[in-house]
Amino acid sequence: MTDCPKKDENLKDCNCTYSCSKKGRCCECVAYHRSQGEFPACFFTAQGERTYDRSFAALQKYHRS
Ligand code: SF4
Image (cartoon, rainbow, N blue to C red; front, side):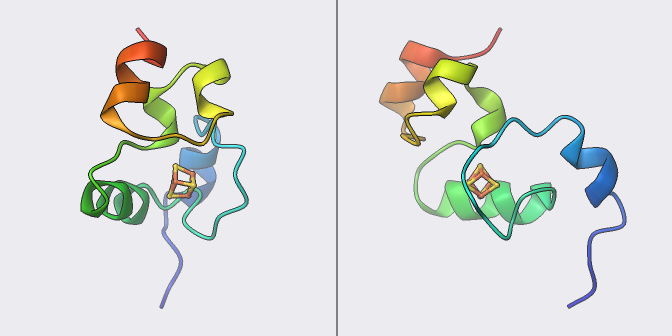
């Protein structure tokens, strides 16, 4: 698979601290979390992101405005 042409640009705004091959590949990241009924790291505050809980319940508590 070829790498995402926007990966470097995407990484500038990525707040995810989890070690993950999808980092910077936002379409893969969103599709993965959507398939799990979850949300990507960039929807969460730094505090919420570090819990690695990407659920809707966590999003309600730790959503970025
Ligand atoms: S939000 Fe999830 S899929 Fe996206 S880079 Fe972080 S751990 Fe990986």
